[in-house]
Image: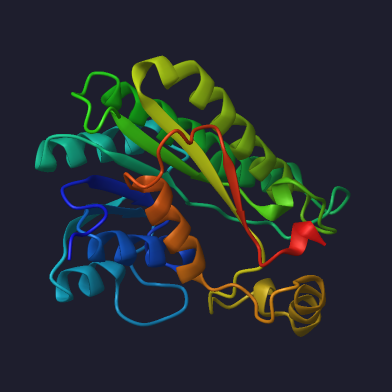
Length: 258
């Protein structure tokens, strides 16, 4: 059976845990050579490292310790991928943090920290990917694909998540801008906006009241899991996604349709 991403080189930021971890494993199963980027190697939800899982399943990849808020780190990351594999086909800007604070509770430091990772990190990833992709030979009429992780919270409001929501709205916007500006260069740029995804990581995401609210709001009879987002990323990263650029694919079990 042919694999959808066979021969592609993909970078996934925030690859050690949660959604990024699922994307990395699924990309590897679909034949991509994966470059895993994160500030830590140990998954927040516990278990083996993502790289160990990828290599243990027969995949090809390596890990780079990267702070996406630092241009030098992202520059080094893309350089390492190209030095090892010769090109970059898919850039997944997934790394993100949250302060879990509303406007009045958010300190200047919290605001700057969230924006540095969630928005400046996406800017760095997009810019460095375009720099690399724009000079590459096309494959199937495409020089490269960028997938940014937005969020349902970048589309509708969420109490107590002001910096996070603003940063994700920005990630969705920059996706559209890049798609329009670089279509003539055969660079595709799309975003994925997850709804409530249960990752298993400790923290506010496991709050019973928040989980119950998400269950009430989600028409589908279960909450999302990281694999749901990984499947969407494979689609957008594959030749199945033709003539799709500047789109924001919402994967939320129907929440926003209600």
